[in-house]
Length: 220
Image 1 (cartoon, rainbow, N blue to C red):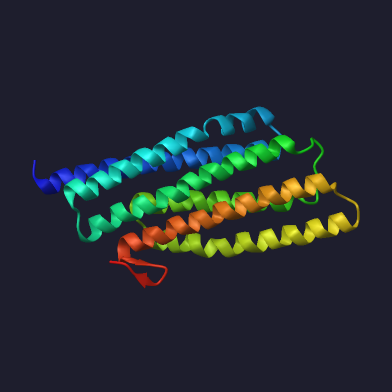
Image 2 (cartoon, rainbow, N blue to C red):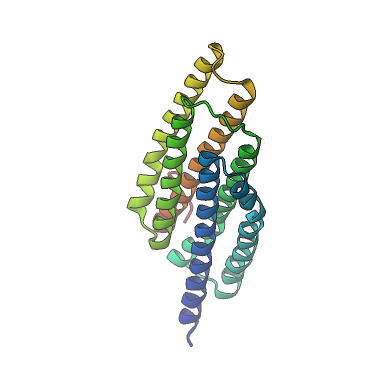
């Protein structure tokens, strides 16, 4: 086997592990969203328990990526790919962390929800879930066009978050929501907003893999 073949085999193994990590992070996010919407405390507890698996993926992939750089000495597009993966797995790990955060907040929420606030939160959460899914699809194919679509979608999430803040303020002023519920729902929404930011980060690293440019700064 040539050095080039060895490098490509190592990179394919790395990409497979990243895809598996991404799938797990997305599953945890979906489960945390479902637990939040349906008040499923058992599912929320399950999300919290499996978070360590995402952390383990990050550690192993980082070791594998560093080993490839050290032993195989990739150049050009291969080096950008491995470097980009080394960066974006941090965002995948944080998505997993936020899924756990959302599950923990769900455990604190009362069974009776404010039905005027919940639809906005749910719509925001579903938009974020879409962003994560599309960023993973973009990652698998290193698809720059899809990555840019993920970045553009973030404006919708930011708008929904502001709408939620406005609605929550109104509900509090009119004594239509308990203060504790308002705090927990806002925290859940903020976690979803942060997940969207991490999806954007992943998309930006995918663009870097193609162009060698990250946020308009040339790195390669």
